Length: 83
Image (tube, rainbow, N blue to C red; front, side):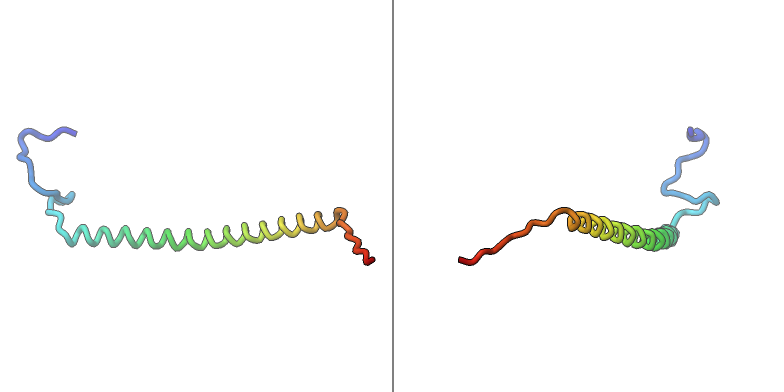
C-alpha cells in the first residue's frame, strides 16, 4: 500500500469511519477479546479433564494387568529351617 501524496499525514490512528481511536475503544476491544479467550479456555479445560481422567484409568489398567501377569509367573519360595 502506498500513501497518497496529496493527502497530508495524520497523527494518531483512526477508525474505518475516520473517527479517532480513544482509550475507551481500546479497552472495550480488549474486554471483548478477553471474553473470547475465557470462553475458549473453559471449553478446553473440560476436554483436558476428560483426557486426563482417561489417561489415568488407562495407566491403572496397564499396571493392574502387569501385576497380574507377574503374579502368575513362578514365585520364589523361601524355606526357613530351625536347628
